[in-house]
Structure formats: C-alpha cells, structure tokens
Image 1 (spheres, rainbow, N blue to C red):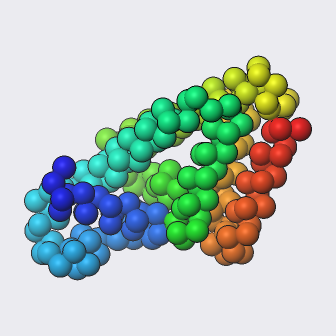
Image 2: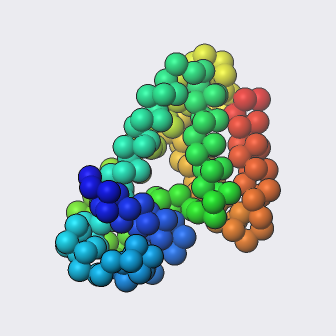
Length: 184
C-alpha cells in the first residue's frame, strides 16, 4: 500500500473501533489527514472497500501474531490474545469484530462475508488453542472447546465495552478471571 492509503486505513480502523462503522464519514478521515474527500475516494471508491481493507489488515495482524505465538504453551498463547485486547482497552478501543457486529445488517454482502470470515478464523484459533491446552493439561473446562471459545471471545469483547463505562480495571478483572477459570 502507499503511505496515504496506509494512513487512511489506520485512521478508519481507529474510527470504527471508537465510533462504529456507520458513525464516521470520509470527511472524518480527510480532515485530520489534511486532504480532500476525493483523495480518500481515490484509494477507496466505497466505504465498504475501506471497511474490507481494515478487516484485511486486522486479519493480517492476527495471522502474524498467531505465527509468533505458536511456539508458546497454549495458556501463554491465549494470554497473548488477551494482551491484544488489553492494548485496545487502554487505547479506548473496542475490538474490530465487536464494533462491526452492531452494524452487520447494514454492511454490504462483501463486507459481511469478510467480517464473518474474521469471526470464524478467530473462533477456530481460540477453539484449537483451548482444545490443545486441555490435552496438555494447561486448561480444564467442561463442554466442547468450541463452546468455551465462544464464551471467551464474547467475554473479551464485552469486557472492552464494560471498561469504557467502568474503567480499564474492569477489563483486567474479567480477563484475569477468564484465564484463572480455564487453568483451574
């Protein structure tokens, strides 16, 4: 990507996480970058194109992180995922999937597909991490790893929302309890 295109995607990512996809316009991107709206449209003819680029960037970071975490024990891998959420919490963000989900029905079919693919990829990784961790006696839980993964992901997403209202300590308390419950 070009430098300007990267800046647009980065700013859009932040706006989605803070305001929501439908709550920002190209003007909200053009003004801070000191360019005309047409410059944003040049790189991303539609807002859906921009949204898909943001999701693609998130998935690229996720895949990179997962590769970096692979040599670690499963409880540390999951802890690293929690650290990603913690970073967003302290930056005042919500997770991308959690921010896009309320707007899902208003997204284009192509963007809906990208968001669904992102959700499935994250769910699959957390499920595998939990199942492998259970086999290695690092995690202890009842039920299927897939169901537990849904609980972990939904708790992480909602903890970011709760932290906005109740303070960042809320995220730390929830994430600490989630890991403790899985280890005991």
